[in-house]
Image (tube, rainbow, N blue to C red):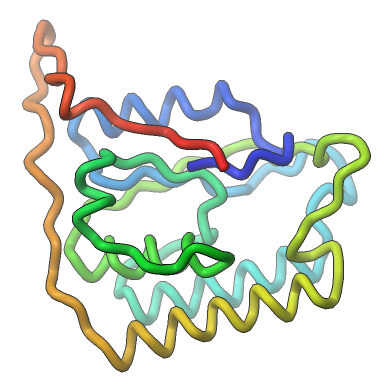
Length: 177
């Protein structure tokens, strides 16, 4: 999964996919650490992201530095989590469920570019968007605390050998949207 606003380079996903395919992680996240220009990531969005990442880290008992605008995992494993949020809370729900299920989570720095010309963030671009995101995140957190779900470990990943390629059903999936 990747935010498709032009702020991340699609090529950055290669290192994330490699980490997954080699079996070193079950969920690989890109974290925004290097804005390529000033003003790309407004202070209030950066601050909100840090607060959310710390709250998630406490709840998930796994240190995260970003709410992961880029996430790579195997499709079957993600579907097995039975994620329910279809709005702004989806990234948060993904991180909480994978962490509580004991998935191995890795983060990699990715460059953060200006959004595509003429576009505006649906979350930080308007007060209504920010309120919607806060509401969705809160609903996911409350649901997570009130209704624990069964642990869903990921399927065993491929063994690391030089000539083994993952079977078709093991291929990682990166979906934009």
